[in-house]
View 1 (cartoon, rainbow, N blue to C red):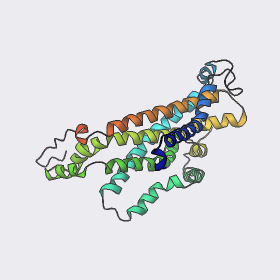
View 2 (tube, rainbow, N blue to C red; view 1 turned 120 degrees about the horizontal axis):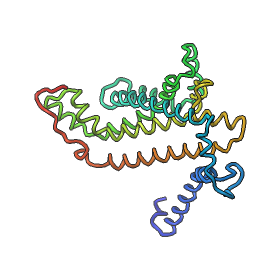
View 3 (spheres, rainbow, N blue to C red; view 1 turned 90 degrees about the horizontal axis):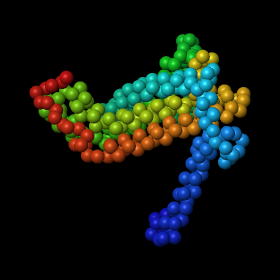
View 4 (tube, rainbow, N blue to C red; view 1 turned 60 degrees about the vertical axis):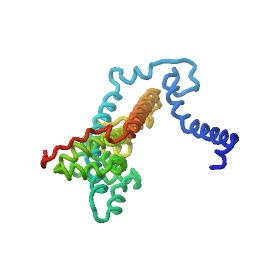
Length: 283
């Protein structure tokens, strides 16, 4: 592979292969986006004519899509709060402390990403059903937190490892307490990673299906479950508009993460004015 880069022909081959891979991965997304504006959204490609009718039907009177969208957004917001809070505590424990059996604990934290989601969903169903919490947005958010927290932990651990611990040691030597160090140094420097973890947690919850399917009820149906129900019993062209909206949300999230990466690659001094007060201030 290194030899291919040394010649013009090799670089051309690599460029063609990369382009083919990108086309293969991006073609389904392009098809969904284009057909969502077609008059016959599930019939032909390219569309014979263009329309915004499917997007208008999403918010028409009597449509179930707005309620499903609002519920998914609410659950995703709750999941973001839960997963970032738990992820930050777990990341600090794994990176900044002498935690015994650290590798085993880290493996346990990442276990929900390895176990099939349908198994996790079944376990959560058996947990919440006796408590009569099925259909509760809180229960669905807690279920999504099981999947979103490992992602948040990985992002936040990488963020904390990139922070120069000498800044924290210097603040401690000047009399700053743990809360002051966390508030004035650790959290400001980790802010880009926290925001990135929040974005990925939101997207993980917003797109999750299996847990939502097991924990939802007739009155509480998230957007992915509503899509599944519509496609199961009928072929509704508005599904393409919903899919296009989901793709748009994912692209916006990736764009925000890209901006955060640029912001987070600057020098640490540019992110934080280090003026930790001396004299044992612990506020």
